[in-house]
Image (tube, rainbow, N blue to C red; front, top):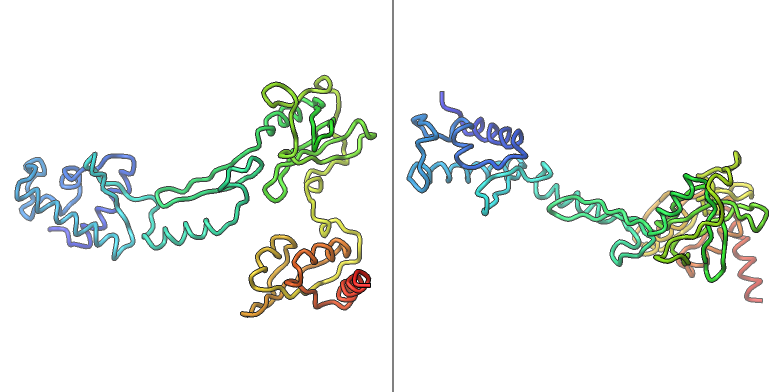
Length: 313
C-alpha cells in the first residue's frame, strides 16, 4: 500500500533526523523514504537527473518540505553547493527560533559588544547558538598562583601591591581576585583585574615568593569574598522596603538592588526588597535622582528625608 502524504512527510522528517550528520541527497530520499520513488514503486536507481521522473520527485519533495515547515513546524535547509538536505538546527519553527534568540539577546551582558577585557558574556545568532566567555588575560596567572600557593605582586591603580591569592570570582561581570595582604597583617583584600597593571615582560604577574609559601585559612568564605552588596552583609535590623521606581529605570534599579516587582503600572513600578544596610541603601538610592523613591517603611522614609534636609540645610 502506498504511503499517505502525512506518512510520507513524517517519514521524511524522521529520516532527516536520523541522518543529521549526513549529506542527504534527493537520490537518498527517493531510495530510502517510502513514497518518493514514484507511484509505480520504481527503484530509485532508475531515476535519471533532469528526467521527468526526477523532476516530479524533486517537486514532491519541495511541497513536502514546505508542509513540514508550515504545518508541522520542522524546517529543513538545502545546501545548494553540495545538493543536500539537512534538518535545520534547532528543531523549531522559524518563529520559535526567533523567539528563543530574542529571549537570549535581552540578557544584558556588559563588555561583550565592545570587547571590554574584564567581562563575561554570551552571543547568539540565527544560524547557531553561541556562548562566548571572555576571560581577563590575568585569570590564568592568578589561577596558577592559587593552585601553587604562590604570592604575587602587581601594580593596582598606580600602587605596588602584594597578595597571597585565595580565589578568583566575578561580581557584575567583572573579574576579581581575593587573598591576604602580607604587607597589612594578612588582611583580606580584593582587587579588580581590569585595574591591575602587570609589570613583568609580556604583561604577566610577578611572583613575590616561593610556591607553597602560604595556606588558605579556614575562615575564608569564597561566596562572601565576592559579595560586594552591602545589603547582603549589613548588620542593621532587616526592613522590608517598598520603592516606587519610574518604569524607564526599573531594570537598572533591579540590577542594582535586586528585589521583586510587587506591582507594575504605566506610571510606576513598585519593588519590594529587604534592607540590611541603611546608609548604603540611602546613598545608592540617590543615584537614581528622584526616579526611585522609598515609600515604606516609615523608618527608611524618615532616614532619607532627614539626610536630604541636612544636605539642604
